[in-house]
Image 1 (cartoon, helix red, strand yellow):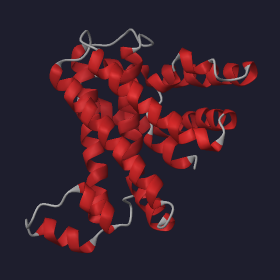
Image 2 (cartoon, one colour; image 1 turned 90 degrees about the horizontal axis):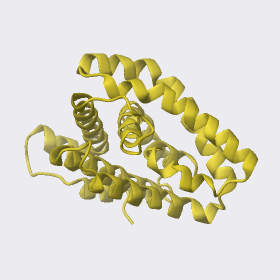
Image 3 (cartoon, helix red, strand yellow; image 1 turned 180 degrees about the horizontal axis):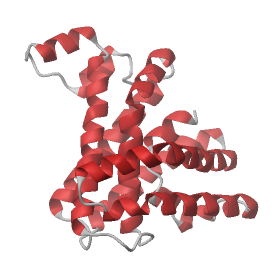
Length: 226
């Protein structure tokens, strides 16, 4: 159960200081080190103001970011009973959404809308994946592998924004935040498109511009709905 939460959950606000008190001192110290390394790695994204530069930087740091995130999640999972993991993750999403809704200093109304759409989309996908793993594990993992590039990039963009909102990253500019919001949203939409493309009938209907297909219908067709 480690993979879906770690892939689909941004790691900024959920691992703020108030959560770290849940860990024993040795694990908390290790987690602090990993989170500091993650912050140092992605904080330059908050000052990039062109899509080309952002894409190049996302490509450059993607593997190292994934390695650090996996280390962080191993520490989290080692401290949480299995039955508490998903409630913990869903609680993360609630806190992220509240943080975004309440912020007016960094985010404009359009930025908040894009971010909330991205967070809601990722949460729905996580819920679908968790349900789907019970019956369609191989197909679900194939979808996640196909989505991996967009998942990582959406995650890096979202985590950078969350660190800015939390005050962990202080060097940023408005145009960079807007760019990160748009980029995160585009990658989230791309992930949903990949879900669509995994069903031949629905894919054909999309290519012929036929009846519109909802992501909920795709989840049902793939056996990913509860």
